[in-house]
Structure formats: C-alpha cells, structure tokens
Length: 255
Image (cartoon, one colour):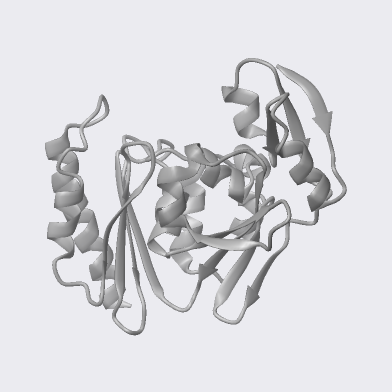
C-alpha cells in the first residue's frame, strides 16, 4: 500500500528520499513492478521529472536513460538487431509502454530475455549515491548482489556497446511466453565472445567470456547442468542451452 508519493525535481532530492529508513521508499519508473508485486506500506519516489529518459549513441556506446521505456528503446534506431528481438519477447506492447529499462533490470528474474541480452553485451549501469560521483558497475557484477544493495542508490543510465555482433535465440511454450531456455551471444571484432543464458533461476547467468568462441557448447551445457524447475528438467535445459548457443554462433558467423 502506497502511503506517500513524491515527485522530486533533482537527483539530490530523490536520493534523500530513497535513503530514508522509514518509510521504505521505492523508485518509480513505469510502476509495473510496484503495481503487481509489493505488499505492506511504502513510499514511492516518481523519477519522471529528473530527465533520465534520453537515449543516444555516443561513440560506440548506447547511453540509455534509466527511465526510458522499453517501447522507446524498441523504437530507437542504432542498436544491434537482436536487442529489439529481446525487448519484444520481454513484455507485451502495453507493458512495454510503462516498464522502464532500469526497472526491468532491477526486477528481472532468470527468464528475462532483455536482461539476458544486456548481460551478453557486457552492459554497465551508472549508479548515483549521495555525496559521490556517479559510478559505472558491470551488469554481470551487479545482478547477483542487487538484493543486498543498501537504500539510497539510484540507477541513472544503462551503457551498452554497439560495435559488435549479437545473436539471441530462445525456446518457449508459445510466442507469448517468456523463455524456458534462451541464449545470447555477443562477439567483438577482436574475437572476444560472451555467452549468457536465461530461462531459469533468479537472474540470467554468464556462461562464457573468452578470447574466442571455442567450447561454447560445452560452456552452455555446463552452466545449465543443474537448471531444473517446474517448467523444465535440468537435462532438457542443459541440452537446449548447448543447441541455442551453437545456433547463435552460427548466425553470427553467417553475418
């Protein structure tokens, strides 16, 4: 239950509100998570007046404002093609109109296609804390620890490279369902190859980050050897992770 609503005009004001011990305060981007999942009494801090919704290309990076909506990112031109595919599989059109980019990453579970792709891209988030300069943190380092982060921090943008090849593949029960298994492979001109897997667990996982693509099938199978739940057995996910990883790599090699 929302007991307070705030719309700060500055980052400082937002950080002050988010850093309070009581009432517990949550940043409000699109509101999709708050509307569906929270219990108890809490305050919301609406970020819409903080100018955090821009999307632009700077050099070889996409600079994505934290409050940008998924649909706005889908409509933006200049990203690797399969980023758009992952957004389309992330949520329906109506939810994409409301869900923010940062909010999607904050609340994502292992079945999030968009988070799986951003992890493969080695994306970073920019975090602002009170009385400190903004700090960039790798998404892969942040995801496992996001529930342990103390109040008072605010994601201001997401930074992702665009000068690479990307492929995303998934298996789901229907086109409208989130994946049972999905894989994303990013490859740089240097040959560096990253493989991330989704479809299971609390967050997508990084299965491989190496100077070349050799052993990608084995890496995928090893990473998902224990990935069983009510949706699929570990044996099935292990096999399909290897298949999807190879399929992604084949698409990249075919250009």
